[in-house]
Image 1 (tube, rainbow, N blue to C red):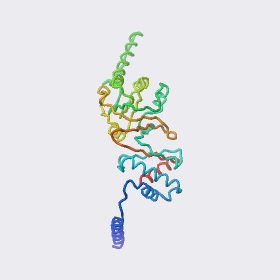
Image 2 (cartoon, one colour):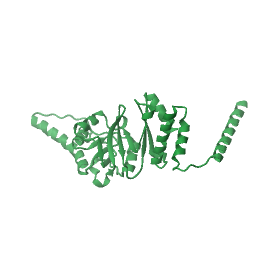
Image 3 (cartoon, helix red, strand yellow):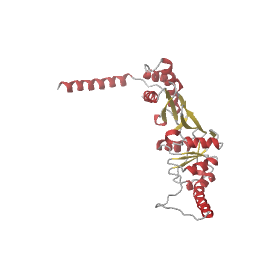
Image 4 (cartoon, helix red, strand yellow):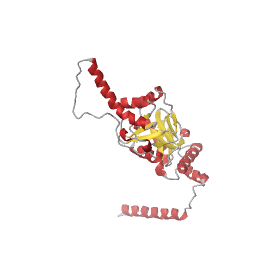
Length: 278
């Protein structure tokens, strides 16, 4: 019985402590930024030096203020290759392009085709599916006997790709965000026409972008129309350390904030994210 008695006493003490804290607490209005920053700094004091703790506390409060203290619209990101003081607050949605969206090849294509890293006032299209030519139902082979037949095969493939690219261009989208994969040739064609493609976007990011930009997600490119596109103030491709990221800011329909945390190693960066999350 002794172990259970000890457990019961700890539980009773915990309830009494929680009741006491609730009775002694006072509300702090959101506009009292200095006091809120002091609280945030106190919560992480002892993990870093005073200056670093103060900076992280300030960034956390700034980000929460941006979203009206709605923590569900605040995202924390951690990347290796920097120090604690390199942390920053992004007033918008940040997408990790290396792990969840476009890859290095897409970035290189965008640069080679002259798409600027920063797009101002872009129109945003959302495709909740895969952008690729239809698959043949069964394994098939194509036999050709002369160059003309081979040209016809290539023409057919181009027509299939064009049928997916043309609706995007007709809708005048500047950015296409796809929840699944985009075929390599189609991605190249979009980039060649000045459209920034973003693929394999995480579901939570995809939904957040839809709410924040006002874009209506469609299941296939042929459903795109100018009226279903969303808007943003700015779309930017940049790097955080060795990681490619995309930022979407100036969101007209729902505010979002992202906090970028850094650490000398991946482990330190992730530990920093957990502490700031607490």
